[in-house]
Length: 181
Image (tube, rainbow, N blue to C red; front, top):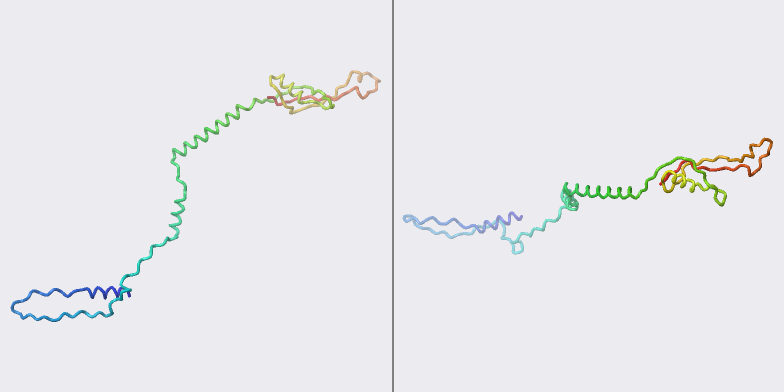
């Protein structure tokens, strides 16, 4: 319908072709100009302007959504920046490992045989024995790893015909392996 209205409007605005130059021998006849009758009435005042185009609204299609997703991504580092970051982290890790190793004391496992003295409650004190065992090997202190027990008896037990009494023998505990620092 809009196309028809535009065609009718352009038909009204067209003019007749200009008259040809007057011929001196031919009589001049003038015919009254008749306007071309349009097929449809001229457009009304309110229909004169075409409707304004609505602004294009955002198209939430797949491509648009992918573009928004890429806009939200963080910027990528260049290869040299990535290598620099990696080197800095490796340097920090190596420094931390060196500090940890330097704080650790040298430990060693030693073997020997050191008797555990009896404490006031009657139990063997093997911490003192492991410390002594480690000190004989040049270390400061130690922890017992392996112990051994043996029964020690007085020579009276060896006398033939003598009855064994409760105080003739005792059980001794020995540290045979220790972890020294």
